[in-house]
Image (tube, rainbow, N blue to C red; front, top):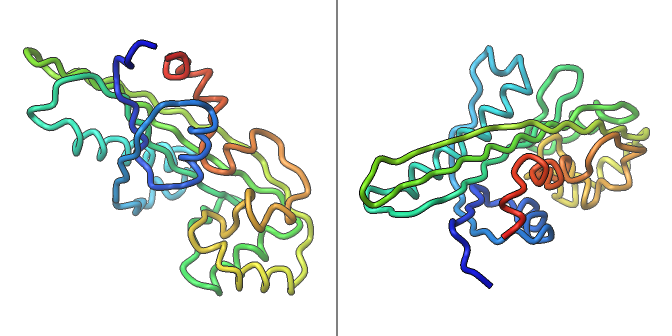
Length: 208
């Protein structure tokens, strides 16, 4: 088998994104980045643009860290971000148990949007030339519908600790699976990385 012609880098520490890419057979390495996820007033009012912006911010940070002056080669960097949006409000990771309870009570018995953005950056840095950068970002959306949740279900789920590192205070692949009545769209988008959409948009990284 021929050696890959370029490195693929996932700019995320999320174990869920890593598992989805591994399952899809993508050969990649992880370079986690820590970026400011603060949104200004205008972006906070536009969740689709906001999630794109954060995915791009993460991918760009990884590129800036990895493509040093002595770097020679070609690299693909994937940045991603996921947002849960209910009636126009972005539900991020809960600050505490009370915030998680607020989100879960709001989502109970209703539908909401889950937007996941993937920002694809291709960097070519020849030893004797200028660095070339191409990037493109897409957003995939899945609609998730929760059944009515009982108070004791919400309390037990919060007690489990599962909500606290997840947008919207729930993980559809873990304890909150039982909360879901149905979805419209790709389950992987809710988990955090729409692999099928990535394969349609950038098939070359799956064909190596």
